[in-house]
Image (cartoon, rainbow, N blue to C red; front, side):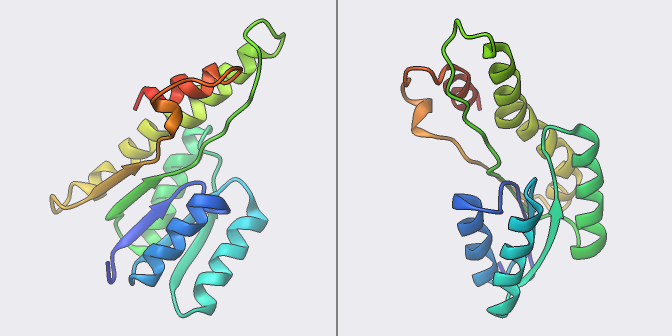
Length: 160
């Protein structure tokens, strides 16, 4: 991975944070993105403190224009994207007859599914340039079954 540019969404915590660290440990130039500015800064600082190469961007993947802007900024600063890791995701437990079900559905599908396609489309020219780009879409065991009150999440994880 030495010198490869890796863009990780949802990288401020959890699996995204671990993925960002892993790629940095392997010599990748990591673009840490998340909608949590403090988390982005913390992960970048952690990686740089251990000798890694990382830069951070605040990115809400629900915003299409933000996706295009951040990808352009990553390329300008780190170089063309070689690996895209779509880790950003949400889960909003809600009963199907709840008043806020439509909001939970729309938000979950937008962030967990639509944003993955938008990220791929924004990075595709870079990923395809040498025929060696890689895309990693993080799924969930919910893609294999269903949990009560998680229908929007379950659908979003079965779709990719």
